[in-house]
Length: 86
Image (spheres, rainbow, N blue to C red):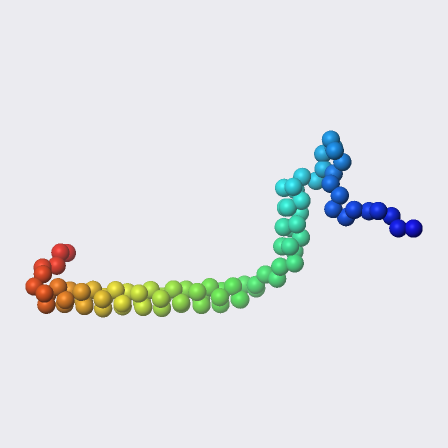
């Protein structure tokens, strides 16, 4: 004979749940963190170097375009006879 069991049954009325929502959440976070594969020190250093290198490349790219567009803008102002403020 089959029994009628509810998997997600609510806590009994009037009684406090055995575990608070925050406690349950932190317990689940701890479980997930145990499943995580953390990088080794060497992998972390290598990935950090890649990020730093890309930051330098992007910074130089933006600085170059800023300089080029500034020169074009100044040239246009000179061409039109407008004095640029500095």
